[in-house]
Length: 224
Image 1 (tube, rainbow, N blue to C red):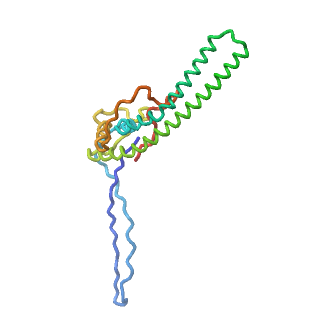
Image 2 (tube, one colour):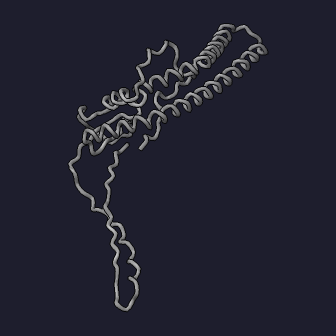
Image 3 (tube, rainbow, N blue to C red):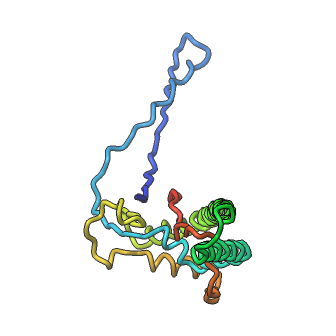
């Protein structure tokens, strides 16, 4: 959950005392400056907003373009993994449809399938990890800028607190009026300021290169 922090400026007054005496040729050194004082907390009327920050980052034009660029980058690897997966499935079907194989031939085929299947799993996990790392990096770069837009927008609208409800399962917000959700407004404001046009629709079959699908949106620490 992300909270907007307000910073209050404290005015610190420093005083110096000069002591003069007829018996001294010059004034005594000034006393040390007074220690800064902290203002007491002040209750102010609350104006609260909600935002699905992680979803907002990837819903921006720049975020969508980043995802499409990554999908294009990993498409060859995805096709390779898909082809290897089909090969393993075909070998399994051939084994099941050949009940009269000798024990030796059957053992050889089982061993071949096991080897290919383990390699397929490793390739899928490696590709998924690489994809997630690149996705996380892209998220971090865009999130920093979207966070600035969010803070600027919230300040202009007079919000005193913004809650991040990206993860509904971990959010403590039980109910909120939908009119307090600024996700779409922040996305639109960022698209306008970034100048990045909306990307064309993604081509079919350009999903992440793994047989174990990665998370659509990586969990990340929202910039503050």
